[in-house]
Length: 114
Length: 111
Image (cartoon, rainbow over all chains, first blue to last red; front, top):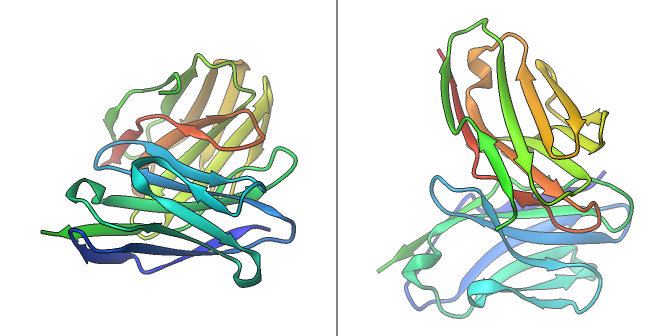
């Protein structure tokens, strides 16, 4: 079975500082990995996805993530935080074949300090 | 935005009453999912469908049933609502080979 672990349920960074949200996965087969963002009272929006092409994936709003098989990690980064990045972020995993559903982590709430 | 509509968006119901939530899509995607979101738990899968009349259980299916009689509609029913089912419910759709797209959610309160 697939699973993801998000380290840190709350992360605070200053505006302009580096954002680093951690995600480690467990999968018996090569995975597809995703980061979603959720703004208050809204649904989930896809930030970026890894589907076995390039290991460094660029997404929307200046975010990127790097798939590291040796570390079973898929951490999300952004060089310079903006106030509008305040939201909850979810990492998700699924198998790279078949009709498997997404399995989500428990989420990380990002707070931006002015 | 993917064409997903959840209804109702908000509902308050009494313990022991049946409740049905509706998810409607205009994308003709094969796969549809119901998740619930609770603080500290992220999103947990309740049921999913991989075609008309084809459904399967997720990790938190007890107390819930689903039906899919048309490609575009996926219904989630709480047979007899309990306070533990107070949650935000999200519908999602997928082609089955990559990411899922989510609706705006339904906030259900069971009193």
